[in-house]
Length: 436
Image (tube, rainbow, N blue to C red; front, side, top):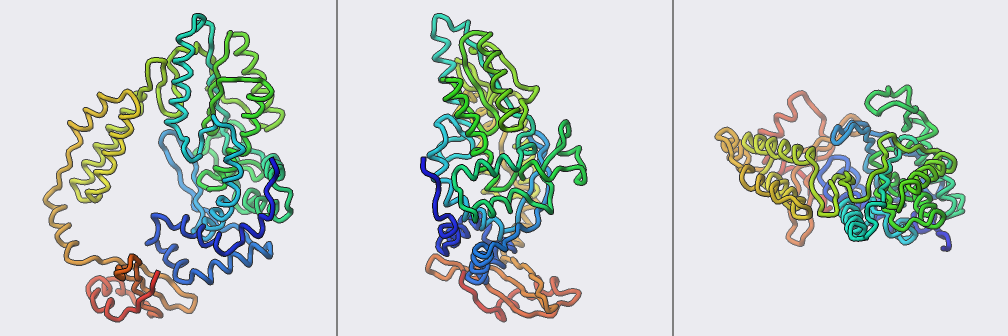
């Protein structure tokens, strides 16, 4: 397949940047950084465009935090401006790369996902269970050890050079991948929550949370997909990000295949197979992409059902105290019910219907009455000259758009926020209207 061309012009095109802004802003329009960026949208997009064209763009700072479920992960979130740049890149390279990927690569692709990967493996298990020699088939369940934290930067950049040999594109991806300010990698044998920042590595790893990291992860392991399909000629091969399952006939063949894949990962991609990887009977139950899969059906894991129950009990208590809105609480229950419909989750669905009952407490009801008297949304943005701009509630203009109310150049004082809350209507009257 012919490589990508004219990426500089396509990524830096103003219309592409505008669409990237819209994608990055979805569901986040009222966050302070998004409102600030939107206030001078044309100026900000032109600045991004100029920096990309002049090759002076640098990646901003990351906000780091840990996600503990289902296992500890270090997540790194970029500011809104950098997310716009990543969407601009993604919009131009993803359509090309998605056509390049093999059918049974299910991670971070439209129309794919964990459920589709589970259904694919389940269908293959069913097919093999009907064979006369079903007992001689084996399943290889593989997992790449600390994949996102161990990816080699040099190898990743080689992968991007294969799809485009343009010097500008190599510079841009190198700027994002080789961040000299923030280390992403982990030394061998260390977990994300056990590794102090000063011990992290600069030459390996990519941040979980970046849009380009998802694309990079798929692109890099596309080499493994092609090795398994075109060199090892494996018919029953499915991968979701760094987790893959393979069905082969014969235990010795399974061991040989497992060894070949491990050798390829070590020598070509500088990665290792996780000790959690295993070889088992093809028709035995296997945990994959969050489900327990057997030839008889797809079931929820015990740890998943326990998590769902804990989560819904927490949401019930939070709603009773008025900590979350009714719509959010209902949406959570509907999502979990939908999850049950796509697997053998009848008992879990019945438990949700019997136990997930939303009741509002007396204190929460009085609080909601107070809030109903008028929305008190405001956000304060500091200026370089010592003043602040006060953003007040957005309101519709009757044409499907939203207007933002803004009071500029306010000299802050100690009790300013208390004054905004008490005299909100007066602040509204003095504000100017900005069309978003």
